[in-house]
Length: 88
Image 1 (cartoon, rainbow, N blue to C red):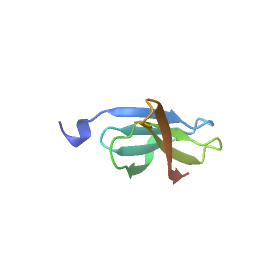
Image 2 (cartoon, rainbow, N blue to C red; image 1 turned 90 degrees about the vertical axis):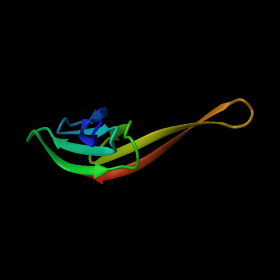
Image 3 (cartoon, rainbow, N blue to C red; image 1 turned 180 degrees about the horizontal axis):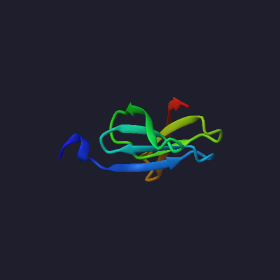
Image 4 (cartoon, one colour; image 1 turned 135 degrees about the vertical axis):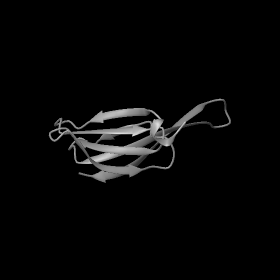
């Protein structure tokens, strides 16, 4: 399997509908301007990209991950880690 043949895992849209972001198994994040129908920025992440979102203003693209672990008392703890990728 080549780097370019790995699939897209997530897609999100800004609230104003101007931008779309896609993230893939290959760790690439692309930011698209839907008014121009073209990719305007590309970023590399460490590992597969599974979760993307825009903030409420639509100006910051966010990548986040969920980590599941056990606290030793047979209770699962979920930690959400957030990484800002770009300001639009």
